[in-house]
Image (cartoon, rainbow, N blue to C red; front, side, top):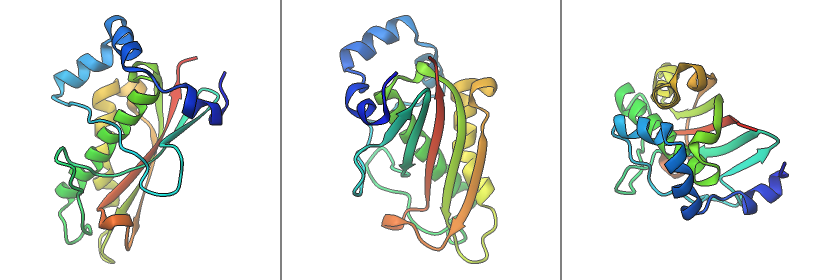
Length: 178
């Protein structure tokens, strides 16, 4: 078993290994194709922390991910000014970007279970539907991994601002196969 510090350097899955592994276990890749989802390249940290995820034992802790669209733009603004639907899409994008990081680091077929999702929603003072916004990420995890592996504990909170003016940020904890 790798320690958390060793993991970030040692467990990045090479493109050749990922291609080899996918030829044998393509369940999640097949599901992503069915859903019409193409994972973008994983993003790099936007601040002074060295890794987008950290493994401890068989748990993978994934740092907060942003709602980055295919064109590289962010979903920005405050919920209350933005609609719940726009926030939902932002949370879904956070989830897609988080899956890209997990796939890059360990491979999605290594995920035994999505354990916890934590989302922060940039909200006006009177906005009280953060839980509906975070459904964008939660629904995605269940669509991709199925109910048994994708259903998870979750927290959704509101705040008056987020870095870069983004509408939502989501982090996750994943249990990995031994």
